[in-house]
Amino acid sequence: MTRTVARWALALALGAIGVLHFVQTRGFRVVVPEWATRLSRLDKETIVLASGAVEIALAAGLLALPRERRRMGWATAAFFAAVFPGNVHQWRTRRSTPGLDTDARRFGRLFLQPLLIVWALWATASSARSQARR
Image (cartoon, rainbow, N blue to C red):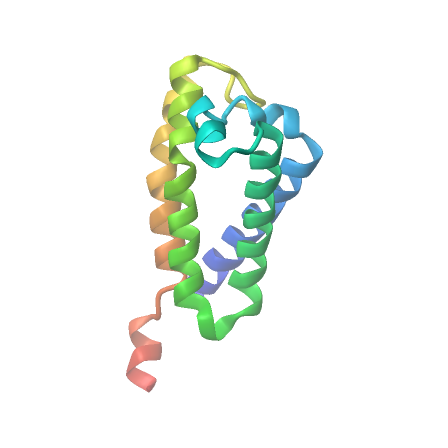
């Protein structure tokens, strides 16, 4: 039951943040490092929109694909790892976004990313009880 609540909470958070990527693209563009635009050959706005779409898709997958729960957890964890350089970029360049408007908050945000990775993996793992029933 606890993992189910954690998975739903993660999905709702991902979905909400994903929607914000479409509503407030300007605020998220400061997080995109210059090298990401060169490497992907996409502009910052497109990267923001794409990452928002991925977040919404992951949220939907976490809820709608119960047989793929474990894979969705790994995909979500991989996404959180992939966007971590953007968090580092924001901290190093001292660029503010809503809620991350001080050096301390931007630095603290760096420690949230590993927790999100653990959350995604834990919330989608099979419990010992469900494995025993198999």
